Length: 132
Image (cartoon, rainbow, N blue to C red):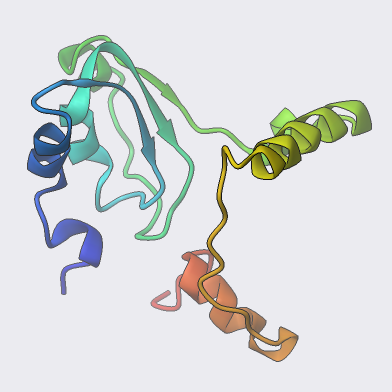
């Protein structure tokens, strides 16, 4: 069974959309199914930001692979590390709400579920892996 993330050649699509430009930064939310192929879209010294595990946690990886792909940088951020105290949380949230108010960031709410369906909401977000 292939996940939707692996049914299409997103590397070719990225090059098509950017007219062949290699991207400086990549944000990978899917996880295991797309991470390694995402490395193909980065320019030398590019940045990979892995922030999700919808298809599962990343497999262990030798750091040398990042060198082979162009001396790439890799980060796995956690929101908790970017909001370590109340003032930082207010600063970051304030910027976010300013972008929304200015129309620089638009939000799309796919669906709303009642609290009783919290498990389903987590499944839809890729938070809970129901296969394990």
